[in-house]
Length: 556
Image (cartoon, rainbow, N blue to C red; front, side, top):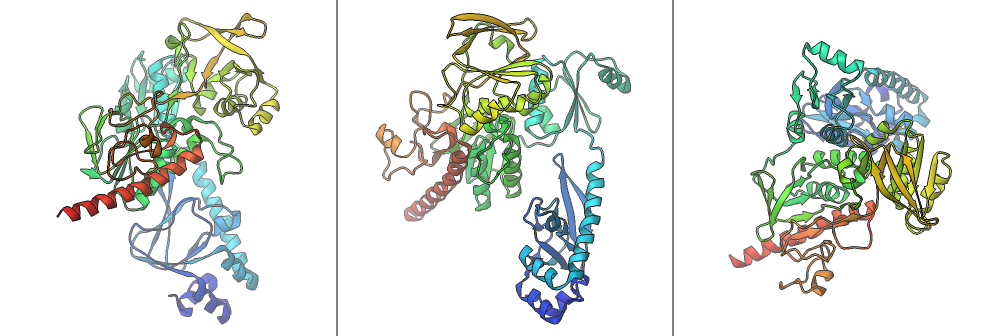
């Protein structure tokens, strides 16, 4: 517990009357930190801190790389910027050695400031000074971690761009036939290459890079570090990341295997307006980025660019593509779903070359001044249409049915109506696509008049529902006719349960194998429900592991 003398030794509080010093000593938190332990993380809630003993390092992550911005020594304070702005902490504050810090909650600070104008003035002045310092740091030009040279319609280049974007890796993309690309090759003193080329920040050149090799060079984890885990999670969407956060926070050795990038299908959403706690909405990739940081900070391992070739439900072992395997005591299936494919002649030939399933936010920049079309009537299509409307000349939403009201949220419909360059075309279908090296035009059937018209098209984005791709799962994991995984009572009703106890709510037909999120048979497909199921799955994992331990002790 803090003493009056210790509080009075902090210069900011040295002029306070004894009664206020005593109140602070009685109400302020007394934090004893070990080296590497955070007093507050980046984005943490506003509060005022004062260093009593030790040394605190100020760190901030830029483009996935942590930088040290400064130090706080005994007698100094931090937290003045969040208090002044009513925001979270712009950086993290970590003990560099055994340290002691006092934490004063916002309301406690305001009580002190009401008594002492001197304290309030000093905190305000320090906040202005520190904000100036932060502005100078953020104004420094940040070098991209990758410079990518490749053609817009090159599928390999498109895959690399999507991978970098979804994994929050900054990059500069140069088209080969531009002066910037000529200057790039000239600076390297070598002739231009045809295929995509990636130049890393350290100068390394990768010709026609494979995504996984690039991930390794960028320091992303692609192989498990441990020999065995308490829980292995397949899929890094909202459900998988929620399970990772709760699993790691509760002391479980946790690993997530993701074949592309954390965020899943939700990570490609341009805006999620109805997720609790974000009144202004949040993009899918930002939500995924926050969840990813949280999971890693709590100790979860996240593997990217790795697919699961198969599982052994009896031993809970994962077999990854290649030769790696992951041993775990329990499994969580959170693989989500994939966009349903359209059976249109020539469609597959133009995927990635003007035709896309879903839409990452990064694709919007390639549609400047073009006329683009979206197929779909759900929230994902509506959100994408709104996002593209700020880039494309026109956005047309093609809907098979007579109305949006049955499939799209009311707030999205109203926002679409307010956009002058967004058009909704009902009772319409794409009949054909045209283009040699890339998409140039599409044929649209207007079912109301049974008329087909051709339109120039700078991009076609498809949002027509999704399928659960679970063919790789063994027969031990029971699914319905569409591939969705059965859990809980649905497993019993289907005759897939043959064990002594009843299955847990999210448990599949295989003991200790759970499913959550969109891959699980459920009428509700929402980000919020996926996050809830991910956290619930960990609760059931705990029960399962506890019962297993109890059974082992009984046998011994």
